[in-house]
Length: 244
Image 1 (cartoon, one colour):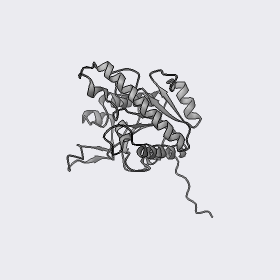
Image 2 (cartoon, rainbow, N blue to C red):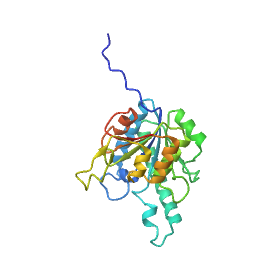
Image 3 (spheres, rainbow, N blue to C red):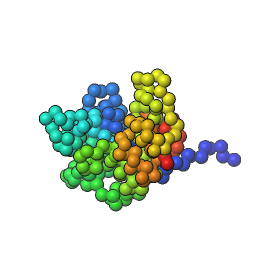
Image 4 (cartoon, rainbow, N blue to C red):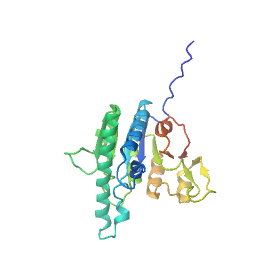
């Protein structure tokens, strides 16, 4: 009788992974750290190898965060549009790293720029996922005043994903910031209502509210752990699940 271990099936058939722009900096103070991007790309490829369909929304905070520069001579709408362009730059870098890691990938932007990447359309994104490509969804929602967290939940709902995987710098949701409060406790599981009532900052209120309405689980985990994205897809690893 064979003693070979059966491959672990994905807990979620289609996922949307939210990666912050800051995660792409590695140890740098600004911009892109290519070895870190390669590591994240390899983790995404491993996640896709589980059999799950994988979409990705990446932030732009390593280049420019619209809400932070608004008011410094810039109105909020202009600053947010600049931040959206930063997400396109990050998505293109991650697309190249994914292709070098052996996975087909496509960048789709909510802000049409057809000479650079495909414009976002739900049907197009869904077809790419069905064909085994990792789909990078850039440009936020295409509108100012919305965070990339809200954009990630919106795209996950549109594409009928089974979960949003929120990759952060900590291994879940805590009662307080564990970096500054040694007494902070990690939650294993929360409801969307509890996350909103406790004003937990891992995602903004609009993102939590939209996830609640769409009945989308949000799995929060640390991207610093190699293989963490694939583990989250399998329903394994250290994480906090926010679900109905």
